[in-house]
Image 1 (cartoon, rainbow, N blue to C red):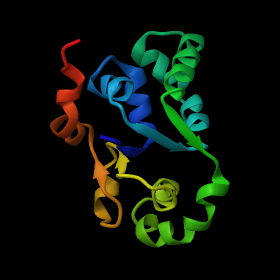
Image 2 (cartoon, rainbow, N blue to C red):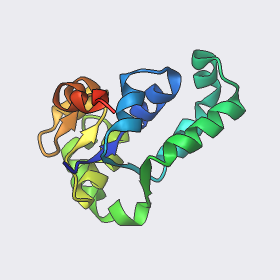
Image 3 (cartoon, rainbow, N blue to C red):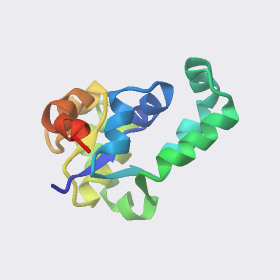
Image 4 (cartoon, one colour):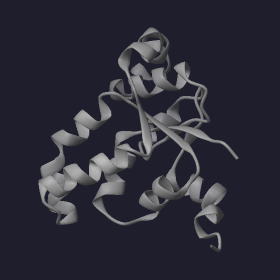
Length: 146
């Protein structure tokens, strides 16, 4: 089974905040994960809040974020730039911040976007996966006997 998913920054933050299903899915599923190039910059802006929530220092969170980044491919703006106008038509009127994720999904061969942002569900061009959806569909992969 080969699955390619675009990962929203809110999912990466959730993986950082606590040891949860999100983190286990991200670190264990044999999927390819992608995110737009600005996602890690955005997350870095919120490291002090993340640190308050997970009780790790900012430096520890920087290291953890670096580890998480190894589980996904960061896609440069130039690869999805041409799809921004189409993405704007799809979701721009709903949430401007979601446009790059839709543009990236339109630019890559993928199986959808993993997000907890409900705005994405108000469009019907790109498949949206919540953590619950992934657990229901692929959760058994997390508990395979060794």
